Image 1 (tube, rainbow, N blue to C red):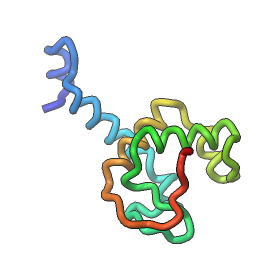
Image 2: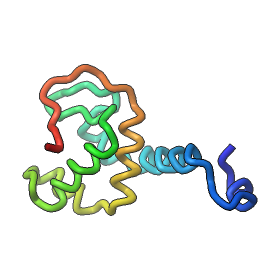
Image 3: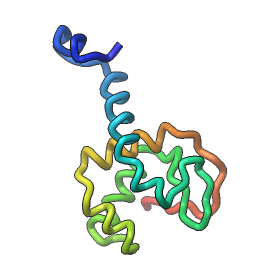
Image 4: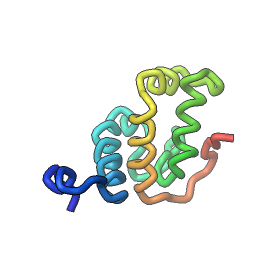
Length: 108
């Protein structure tokens, strides 16, 4: 089990511990995202973001942050995120079930 005591006793944390922490942090940060993007993966005119590969998710956020992709709401959100927050959100949303969807924006 990933605990503070365990982390103090072991020189390095197990990889699953780091992923669990990232996922928990991403869940904590996800409220702003899920205000528009549905958590159940349904595309309601706003693309679903559940089940995305982590790197694709992070790359897409970076495109909004640097202006390569244009959307005022997404640019505002992306500007407020640092790299660790992007990775945490990507880990959390990537862990959610992917549902069939149309028109998913690609990082490419």
